[in-house]
Image (cartoon, rainbow, N blue to C red; front, side):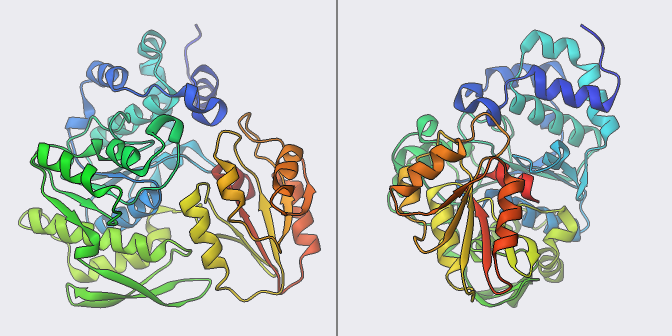
Length: 434
């Protein structure tokens, strides 16, 4: 076994040596906590050396994580942020105050723990989580916002004891692992609830309420719902920012702007502002987050955190938007939001992974759009010709393209200046397009 010495070698080792969900799907998962617990014990339990907020949910957890990170940054706190997956650069997953983990730090972690990695054979996700915890501890962050990868109860991030737990919402995704009812999925997500630690739920979904109450009662965890704290309504938008009204106002803030765009923006603002409200309710004596820092943090999420991937504007004439929507709930919201935009003709670049429940999603897609069926450069991607054939059963018409670049180029060439091009269906597809 040759020793890792360079960043290129370290990154190649991560991608080639370890099972990766994007290549192999559910079989790449080690859906238990024994291995990550053992690994972190061997590196002196870095997760116990800094404060955290833990965020689970089907949709919105990544964006909400970035909003919270931006607020804490504006408040003057050294803030770690762990999210997944990444779109372009592995280091997107691990940031402090919006800056990616340095290549030298990543290389050093892999090199110094190479024997341990060979011994314990962690999954790709376990390794990235351990690396993030080690980096945040080494850099002595004041707080880290930690996004769950999949589920919650047995997700590798679930070895932390956070100051606050957040569950954004529940939709059908990863049903082969988490369960095929909203109740079962909610129960898995609610596994992040910790004893005596407050938890806030983003949405009151009747199928999920009993799961939250049962687990929070068992853990003596104070339970709150965003819907009981604030309502957020979009009142204005353009291609640079979105403006909302808060009802009731929080911290005397009635209206708020953000540089994040897209269909979930109002929900994500609701999740984040209600989370800060509960956080300050419990920890306001030790943490100072003034109203102007909250508004500034929400206004500059992209600037502060290098947020990418949702409702990403690729071009303006024609308007082309790449969006990471890839499950029923997200795609439904995206299509509804798209219908509120003025355009002459809709073009959809569609690429999916083969293990999703695409029969239900195909039924949501508009029949009057022009489709460009393609695939991301990962083994799990559905073949573009198979996708086109499957889509034809739902009266979705278009042509097949062997890769995202060729689909994008054809759509840009065919679309008029007043048309809208929407790319969706796979995070990996969006990563290639942006």
